[in-house]
Length: 158
Image 1 (cartoon, rainbow, N blue to C red):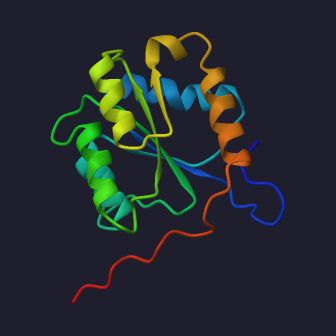
Image 2 (spheres, rainbow, N blue to C red; image 1 turned 90 degrees about the horizontal axis):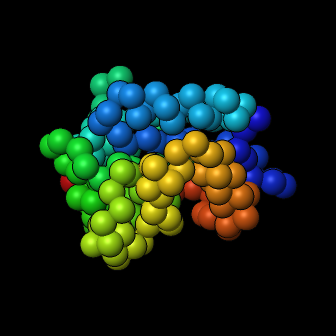
Image 3 (tube, rainbow, N blue to C red; image 1 turned 90 degrees about the vertical axis):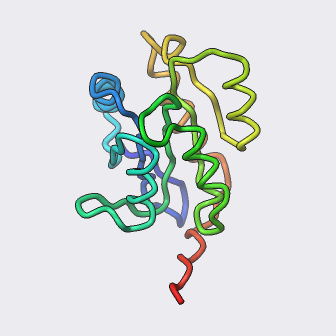
C-alpha cells in the first residue's frame, strides 16, 4: 500500500526521516513495513544532511516531491528545530510538511515546534507500542489536506 492522494494527483508521498539514532530510524522503517506502507523513505542523520538532500547537493541521496518530513529534534551538527527554522527561511522549502517525532515531551520544545508551523508533534513513547496511530495520522493527513501539486522552483544561482 502507498500513501497517495486520491483522484488525479496519484503521486505517492515520499518521506524524509531526519533521525540520528540508527535504532530509532530502523524502528520507524519497520513500522512502515509492518503496516505494508511501501512509500520511499529517505533518511538523513541530521538537519545539515537533510538540507543537502532537499537542495540536491547530497552526493548519494535525493528525494522528490511530494513529501513529508519526520524530524527528530535532538541531533548533532544541526538539530531538528534549527533544520525546520532553516526550511521556513527558504521560499522553495518553506511549505514543506514537517512532523516532529521525538523523545522530548518538554512543553518548551512543543511550543517552539508549533511556532515553526509543524503539522504535528509526536512523542516517541506515546507513539510507542501503537505506532499505527502515527501511520494512520500520516495517511489521513496526506489524503485529506489539499496541497500544492509541485514545490516552488529552486532559486537560480546568479
